[in-house]
Image (cartoon, rainbow, N blue to C red):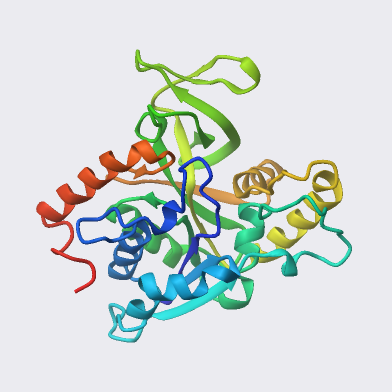
Length: 307
């Protein structure tokens, strides 16, 4: 079955202190998204769509896009590679972009920008996260079972395995019932403390969260009918929120949560046997580099992903 991997790579990476999406953190200079691509293709995915800023095109082709065009799928066909631009040209004409606005409009807008390139079931991921081999296998198998509409999937991770000692992180905090998502709340300031406790510290509060809480790391599985919902939600966001807050972002977990609450979308929660890791802060880099080297050394990956 054909399936697309959609990689959100247009983020600014401000907390990281540089463009973390293209930081060569692997033993041979591999960037994190190369591991996602490698794992997705061996799981069965047949297309890769990069969502980038227009000025990133040449860089993305040089980093991995041109090599990826030479790869083949499990069935022996060439991997299809597409580039979608997340910029202000895709914003509906009714909305006037404030002169002060420089940031993109968030993850819902990012995925919507890929609509022209995605006609098959697809998985959405962040460019700067490592999700693990098993996550792609589980997601591909689930995409093969999804009907045309009304169903989706996500890979859930335990909160304790996704926080950083180097600062706060944002996570989609989930409630799961009978294997399906019952609610999700985008929680923007989660901090790990020295004693191992974890809390939401937004607005000066201290709301403790259980370490085993299931969280979303933006690893979603959809069918193409979701694009209609993405468009509707993004337009409502522009009407209601963005005019009053030039930094507001239209976030994918919030859209999914709304559809789940309305009962129009059922999201299966898949669990990966692998450990997530990523680079929110530059101080996270040493840990990520060590983990990737370990995975090469134990045979999970070949000596180089670029052979």
